Image 1 (cartoon, rainbow, N blue to C red):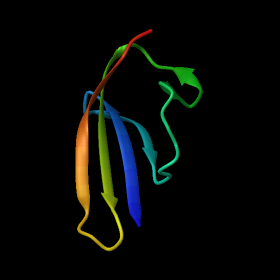
Image 2: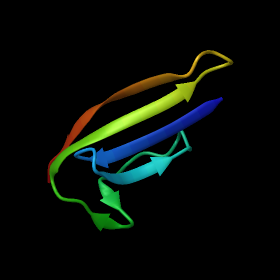
Image 3: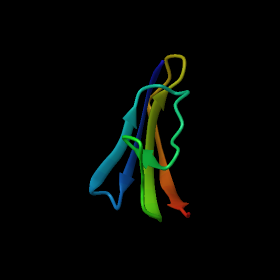
Image 4: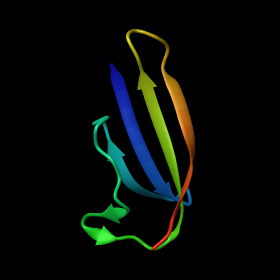
Length: 63
């Protein structure tokens, strides 16, 4: 099984990259609370020897 999750702020700054499918994102980077805004996520995964799939979208962080 292959999995990678990435979260970006406006496609420029990588906020999180993880290969742990159980790791969530709490709106922080290195313990620092991030500003409200639109963040982009990209998940790439492969399940049980299938083709790799990529899913993405956006999430709005509000405080």
